[in-house]
Image 1 (spheres, rainbow, N blue to C red):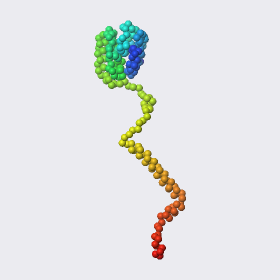
Image 2 (tube, helix red, strand yellow):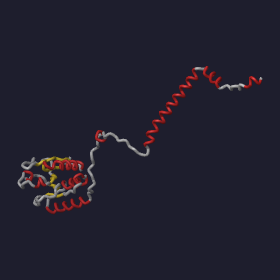
Image 3 (tube, rainbow, N blue to C red):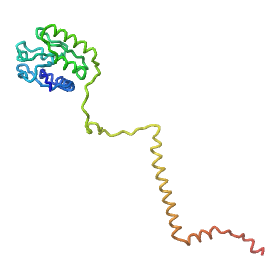
Image 4 (cartoon, helix red, strand yellow):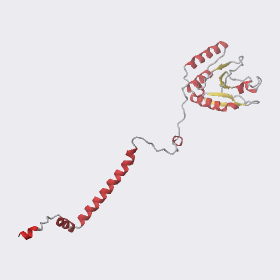
Length: 223
């Protein structure tokens, strides 16, 4: 497992979360090192690679701050998250400047992780690596968002009450239930009449007598 130390000011915790997510997606394990105005945790002995989130809060620290003390880190990559870049030119830092949308981009943090793994034993090697970083950043799309975690079911379900949709098909939603109800009522009446006629045979005789032809009244006098 590859470990990378993430050094940031405690005021930049939100940007640090984006950095942790992006570096993790790039395949490295992040060791957080938050810094305050007067103290800094000791650097981790588990890695020799460091990523520094350089902001105005971090740049305002004094040069003798414990965060800038000499350590065993072989490579330090500075990611400016503010309008100003690091002014400590004497330090062998690589600069990976992001755009506004790059802090959420998977491609950007892959470049950062790659830069942190490049050995820079000499000044010429550092300059060559810095130029390679700038070339790699040209191919990073600002819309290349980092892959998000799968959303849980409760995050997907929208509990907002559904509003009725009105349109040219509203008449179908109103007529269809009425038609079904009318059909059921007609079938029930027909079934009741059929059952009544089948259970009472004398009803058929009464129906037959009602339908017999009736002779005209004048026929009896003519005979």
